[in-house]
Length: 202
Image 1 (cartoon, rainbow, N blue to C red):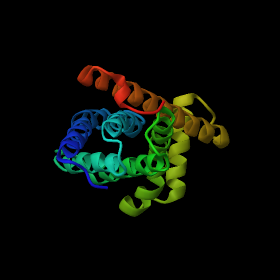
Image 2 (cartoon, rainbow, N blue to C red):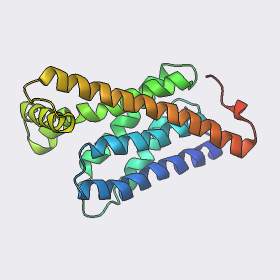
Image 3 (cartoon, rainbow, N blue to C red):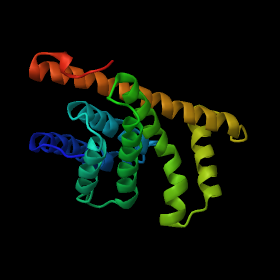
C-alpha cells in the first residue's frame, strides 16, 4: 500500500512515540525487574500504534509504525534489545494482520487487534527463548506457571487455572488497549479537525 508524504510523516510520529516509550520506560521497567513488564510495554505501544492506524487507515500502516519503533529501539543503551525488537515487530504484525481482515478500523477491530497483540507477549517466550537463549520450551512453561502462581496466589499445580487466568488477563488488557486507542484517536481527531466524524465506523 502506498502512502502519501503526509501519511508517512504521521506514521513516523506514532512510530517514534512507541520507540521512545520502549527506550525510556522499557529501560526503567526492566531495571526494576517488574513482572510482566513486556505486557505493560506492549499495551502502551499498541495504544500508540492502533491510534496511528485511525489517522492512516490503510493496510500496512500499523506494521510501518512498529518498524519505526523497532529501529529506534536499536538506540537503547545498556540492555539486550533483540528480544524486545522481535516483540515490537511481532506485536505490530499481529495487529496488522488482524486489522487487515476488516474493511476499516472500527472500534471492535481495534479491540480484537489489541487483544491478540497483547496476548502475543504470553506466547513470544516460547518462540524466542529456545532460539535466542537455548532455554527449553518446558522450562519456559514452568517459569510462566511460577509467575502466574505468584501473581494470583494460586497453587503451581493448578496449571490449567493459571494458564486460563493468564490468557484471559492478557486478552482483557488487549481489549482495553483497543478501546483506549479508539477513544484516543477520536479525541485527537476532534482536537485537530474539530470533528470526530473523520474516523469512519464504530
